[in-house]
Image (tube, each protein chain N blue to C red):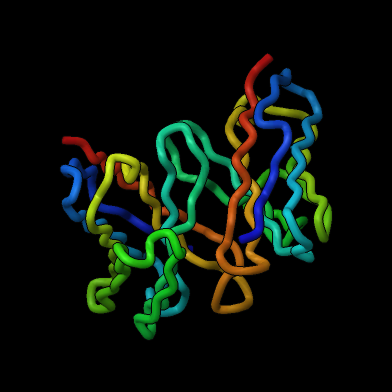
Length: 122
Length: 107
């Protein structure tokens, strides 16, 4: 079925970078795309991008193009998202989630990691 | 980007009530519409995909319908565990986008 387990909460200063990990188990990482979605406190869901764990290909939302990087380590079944030049409005819960469905992308998202809270504060 | 408009943004209902949430994309999306439930402090959970297909393990009181530019999620017989926020999502065209959410509260 699949389980996604994310790294713990982070507190960063404005201008710094953060790297969040998402370790998958119960299925082969290279089989399905992984998406990253974030949610600011009390707000809705915002898609950040996807990574194809098989090839390493990525596709990022235009908003994050110049300061996000998604990578993977197939040997440890882990994907990562790094966000650079953090601002206070990057404070949010960050989720990884698997792309399910008949095509490689984009179908529906299931399951989701438990979330990683990133707080950006001086 | 396709804008997703959910209504209402919140509602109050009693246990046993029938509740309907609507989702309207800014352009036609065929049936590329998914619904998620999110409880406070938890990750979203997939309820329905492809507009009307119930995800495995989701109670049959949840149902989805619609196509094109008009979709709905119905909960027939609201249960205490259903009080949560609900989000629609389109995956018809990149980037995938979500509605702003509907919070279902206890009356």
